[in-house]
Every structure is written in C-alpha cells, then in structure tokens.
Image 1 (tube, one colour):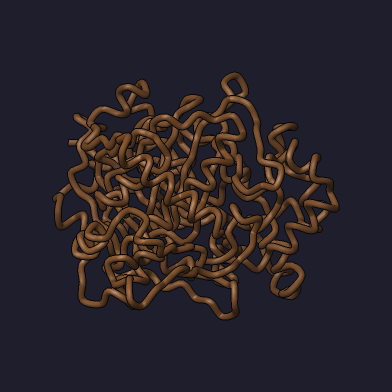
Image 2 (cartoon, rainbow, N blue to C red):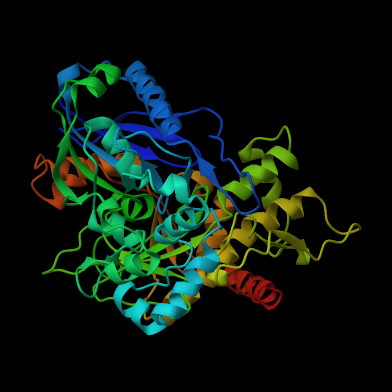
Length: 490
C-alpha cells in the first residue's frame, strides 16, 4: 500500500493526514498538541511562535497517525506541506532560528508597510504587488532590521513557516513564487522578485531562499529527519503552499469564479481570478495562486478576518466554561436571528486588513441586562463573525467577483449548523461542505506534484460533498436586516 503524507502547520496546532493513493481515502489524521499551541505576545500587537515548536508538534501528530495506521517506512510516496501564511522565520548558517517567528496576526509592522505604500506609490504597489506592503512578511522583516539590527546582521536566510518545515525535513532552504507573493516579495507584473520594495527596505536579496516549483520534486527527506520520523529517507517533498491557497486547492478551487472558505482560528474567503485585480485600500489581498503559470494565470483574492475561531474558543474558555461547542451552538440557536439587537464585532486578534489595518479590539454592542442572556451572546458571536466576513465579501464583489457558491471543509465553525445557516442566508450563497481539510489537501497535492496522480480529476478522487446549505427566502430577509443593522453600527 502507498500513502501520501500531508502536513498542515497552523497557529493553533499541527495536523497530519495520511491519504491512500489507491482510492484517495483519508485513512489517518491527527493534530498536536491536544490544546492550542501558545502564541507569545511580549508587547501589545505582537504575536510570535517558536518554529521548533511546530517541528516537535508535527512529530507528535505523526506519531498519533502511526497509532491509527501501521504503515511501513517505505510506504510513504510523497509529502506535501500547508502552513500559516505571512509568518517570518529567520535562521543562521546552521539553519537555527535566531528569534521567534513573527506570525500572521502580529501587528507591529503596520506603519512600516503603510509608509512604504505611500513612498513607493500606491499605484505602483498595487500594479506590481497587487497589495500594499501592509503588515505582511517583507514589512515584518524591515521591522526586525530597524529594531534588532545586530541580530539582523546574523541572518543567513528568511523563510515562511512551511519553508522552515520543508528545511527540517530535507536540509534544503527553498521557497515558492506563491510564498514570495504572500510575503509581498514577488512582483507579479514583472514576474520577478520585488526588488524595488526589498531595495526600499534595505533588505539583502541574498536572504531570499532559492525558488522551487509549487508542484514537483522540491527536495527529499534526508537521513536525519527520516530517522526521527520513522520514514524511509529519500521520500520526495513535492508541494508546499500557504494555508488559504492550499485550502482552496483542497476543495478543488482552481479556476476563475470558484470560491473557498474556511473558519478556523481566522476566517477566510478566497476566490480565484485569471487577471491581476486589487482593492485600492488593500482591505482584501491578491496573491499568486498555487496553479498559476505564465500560460494560465491564476490569482487568489483573499479576505481574512483574524478573529473567527479564536473568538469562539475565547468565549468557550472564558464565558461558556464547562460547555462543549455543540452545547454552545444549541444555546445560540435558541435565540432569535439578530440576537434581539445584540451585536458582536469580532476584531480582537490584531490589525484587521479589512479595516485598513486598524486594531479596534472586539466589542459587544447593544447589551441590555433585562433582555439578553447567554444564548443571545452565543448567537451574536457567530452572527458577528459571519457579518464581518460578508463585509469583506462585499469588497470582493465590488472587484467583480460573483459569489454564488462557496466551498468549505466540514470542520471548525462550519460544524455549527447555525454558523452555516447564517453564512448562507447573510451572503445569499449556497454552501457546499466537503470531507477534507488542509492536511488532506496537502497530501493530495503531493500526489499531483510527484506525478502519482496524472490529472486533477484523479487527484480529487474521494473528495465528496457531505452537506449543502441553501439560503431560504424567509431567513434571507431576516439575516439581511440583521446585517444592515450590524453594518450601520460598525
């Protein structure tokens, strides 16, 4: 039997999935740790994680998978990697991290990116990078250069989180065009490194890793990692992508007009287009998609709301202590649509791009002690997350995207019937929920990259719709009124 191993490096956990080559079935899946990984915030707006923690939790997750499937060392045919986007990992010549990774929800570089946006010229940045440099990876690197100059002098290479895990597997430091694009280090117009921005920031281009194709043999598992993992050395690593482009791939969202969504720690709607497009204030972001080529251009438009699953988790730990998520969902469903006027604004997890990188914090508004109870709070939280997502989706529609059907994995907040109902009826889109996740998608992509699957159709064997939620006329009107009230108070 042959298997494909998918690794998904999130900010909450690291997940592994084992997909059978023969029939595309996911036969083993696990995540680690069982509770959420720590995010360090030494100062307001900071968010950091130790890259070696990701590696250790990957090994723990893989060991859990081994308990489910007794595969042999030589039965892993290829490895694919998905990872949290926009993180900055810096290493020395020995490949050792020189500081904690500055991860996606860190806000420290907002003003650096905003200044570069104006100094380089907004039209220039948008036409070349499809974005403001904003709070993304290149700007985070500039922050380190300005604030930790002696440490910066010791940098050998910079990597994204997935590049680092690939390095730990293979000993080779590489990156991809889509990865550089997400870090605003790729000039999509000129099809080359974003040298103008790097020069503006005074960043040595030698710090950038060599570019490897998105799909294909990027490197192979070296002997030391093979011994640690109990897998045969030489297994090819054939795919890596940021979590949101990879989530789109997982759902077979590859062609113009197709839309994917996820609602994990953050919430994302991601649509594919075939021409560069951008929102002038950069409230949503455009990046090179995983299947982009010079002949068939593919770009992903990404809307991100930072405070999604993390808000739900915070409420469960601090407000609904002792209740499971299904119990909280049932409690929320007992309150009316609109939560009797109680509104939640879920902007409590760092600078929000959809709000032009403002960081207002999360709020409950309209709370009345004689009218509202915990059921209203529970409902307001889920509806507030949906409303925030739809606020961003309206920007995508203004860019020319039509959002009629949204595909998502049947996981995270989409496990809540109320959340799925609110999403369908607020947006007016049909929601298709699939039997997949980021780790499974990375595994399937690895099979495509290794040439094991000869076509996309073969790659997605086993991918199935588990549930479809259609908007209804009655609920559509109720949710539309609730959204209008929420938006008028934003």
